[in-house]
Figure 1 (cartoon, rainbow, N blue to C red):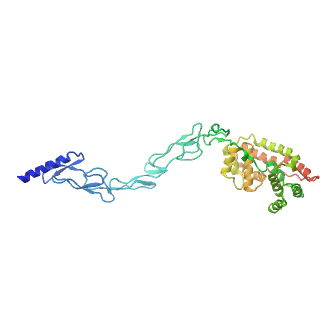
Figure 2: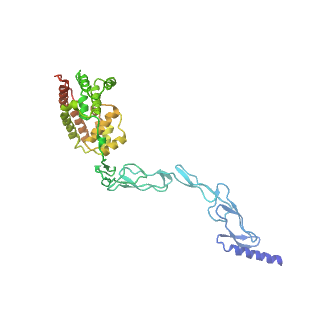
Length: 389
């Protein structure tokens, strides 16, 4: 009798404890013929033994590579069956409470069953919504006052630089593919060592035999030293010596006293160059094409960008040609002769051809004759040659 009462009290006590817990599962106890409400096992475990009237549910941890993600009444755990495919990475590795979770790696999204690269927005378009492992990039055209100059799956359109807010003038107006370029406060970077007319004059194709000696005698009384003259004669050919001698003289002399009678004529020549290049409305794209069309070594990108920011036509083209000559230790007239015209827009192609003809044509020939007579002091005149272009 005592044993029966004890057993009854135990059952009542057990039920009173478990009734407060909603995570239960029904279990029929064949020994007591009783329908019990057993405690479920927590995530990461499974039911090793069901509860009885005398004991609670016995739980055991999931073995390696198996899991249960919820409270459960399972007699075993689920196998971690998920395997990451090509271009996928494990967002979450298999654990006792979760299966392995895979997603597309950075820069890709799930397109049906495969990972595809995020769409790249071209110049003139920016990213409105960046791609995720589950969605593609959304692009939108740059609106007025905005630009994008890159091909990117992450870069949005940017606002044009406000030159007025910076206290500067607009040098090149912005577009959907390029930022506005402001004029620098100082334009000293547009200065060049030798003008196109001066170079053409001292690199004329057929100098007289005594030309270099006449120049040496004239420059010997200036800041040019005999050691510097000897260095030029040792370094350069006879055809190149007049140019580099004049270049050295100009860099070391504050005034062109030796050539005072010719200053007016040189200025007239330079005005002719300005008239050829001044009306030319160059875009940034056209400038890049021009520099890529010149032979031999290309001018550095940062130098071109700096020139675009500081120089206006006609100084822009003159400065860029000056940078090319210095970079290649070359001859600008020869560079214009070898210019790959097919890459240039029609208007720019015609203008460059006319520039080459102007620097090697009748006007320069007349100027060359005049300087020979002025400096040499005799009637020796060079033989006229055909224009290089």
